[in-house]
Image (cartoon, rainbow, N blue to C red):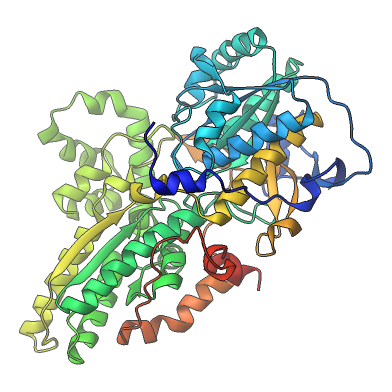
Length: 547
């Protein structure tokens, strides 16, 4: 493997650990827990893993003896910066517990467990990937673990390799599957533990115990660098409006964090759109007014940040998509047989009157994108919907009308960007390198203490790393019931942008100023070497939430 100069230098970086994980560790159990909603239903579905206490780790006076054990690890879902450090922390934690412990990686996601594809992760392999981005050490995949035959097939290889526990590194859906697997193995008394780790750049896997998901910090810093570069170009050329779509299908955390870092002229927050019951035309009119106001000051340029999942948060569109999801789940096979040129009419004929009218009113390209094949979790693939182009086209049309009416005197020329995959595999920031390493180390201690159905938790993240608090949170504590693929299922509740929270309020307090003025900030690239105030800062979101 040919390594860059940065990769060689980063290999020497030693991630910081919370004080409680540096020496001998003891487990302190808190109060019993319950799910965030639908308690009776969740308890019935998870009788063996429901109601377990929160776990906190503290320093112990004496070292405990742990028998040798083998552990498996899976990278599940989309990539996020720091995954390799979770595995490094897990490996080092296991070796500290007992040098005879062994770690096996299942290849290309949960499918590797089912299909028995694996490698043993040795020190030589782990050392090649420390502090690097990506999931390429073993690859990732989106196979859902939800069927008994998958659980039993996975059990075969776990028994063959004498694996005691499996660590699943993933987002809310992947950790939901981890809990289902933990419950099944516990109910069968198979002696296999399952531990989750909170991964997603979207930032929507968080709560009081999980302050942020790993990868969010690095991804936002990566996007903010590029947006800042665009803003500088924008302020130099002074003739383009840049419409920038950012990853985040179910929540606007990335758009909000990047807005706080770069101070663009206009930022859409999907949760606000839904709360205010805004229509697509409401959003377009507001952006157009911002463009017109800046043009009146002689500024025919600016930046607009758009969350990837916006289309699903516009209430009328959300109702349409919900019915469309149910229709395609029920009649997917029949729909697939219909010629492409007749699919639009087929959908219109099978929707309720209100939703049929909305669907028929959409530009053909957007309508087609809404009816594309769903992802493995039954969701519309919103990343394929070119919301940035839809909005700029509609803004341009509205401005043209205003110009004829004498309401607008400027020039409008739009450029489009979608920043998604650029941030998912970036080399982790110091924060994510430390946080991920701590999560992996925490997972090893949870396993050693016989826990299952838990997610590794590291808290107090705005403090120096030595003051971080490590432990575990029962995954069932995060559950509620939601409709998926036409059925009600237990899933981890997504954390959306809190419209009463400090980060959103900071945006609201500044949005009028940023809209009118050119108040751009240019963050520059992630700094891995230098003073702590430059290199080790957590996200603006976390700082504001914990202020």
